[in-house]
Image 1 (cartoon, rainbow, N blue to C red):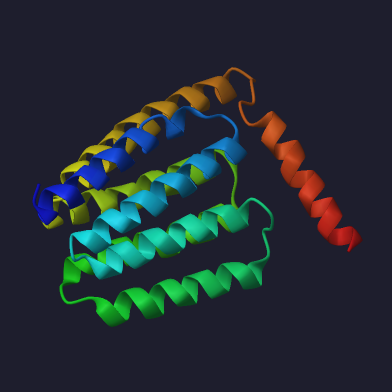
Image 2: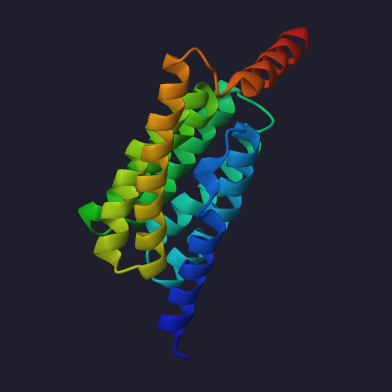
Length: 187
């Protein structure tokens, strides 16, 4: 097996890890699975020679785990600055700016939003990743991000329909976020 196909197979593994991520109503499980997926796809991008995307994905993984513990604005800013510095310094083509921008926007979303708003922002971020992955020729990356686009889109519609019927699909998560905010205020 050549190095190229080894890199592509890592992308396919990432596809398998990430395929069910958007079905989670639990923000916590969603973020845990997103973190695992991001780490694997980051390795794939680095193997494919796409350093800005690889660094953005690896930062995504770490950022997502940290966002499970805190919603601190300063930590969010650190991740945004790291993403911009590492991503922009290695970009050689304008398309490589797409994953950097997507990472900045999704970082803000994971620290400052929840529920349907997070899903909608992640959907927009995914559009940037799809365009980048097709340009790069990443088989696994294109498959997974394309799948994310479709699955997350359907789930956004499904969750919104539940909300319109008076059912909050994110009720449990809101209580967890409130508790985190109360603990932060008590410190």
